[in-house]
Image (cartoon, rainbow, N blue to C red; front, side, top):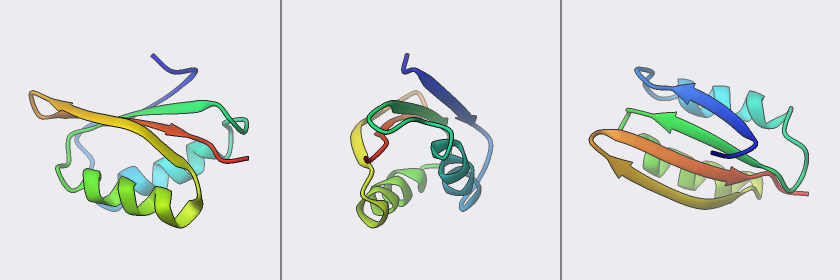
Length: 75
């Protein structure tokens, strides 16, 4: 598990992105926020979010309908 964690299971777009944006404000530069989501649309949303904000989508995976994202906060 990453240093910081956000659970957005059961929430639909755009709530996971909005909560992630707010949570990243409390994550120091270079550290990773782990996000759990169940919305399949979150994959495209977090890819676009990272492109637009300069944060790094270190990895993501899906298992049994649970999407796990690891986002490294930009400097």
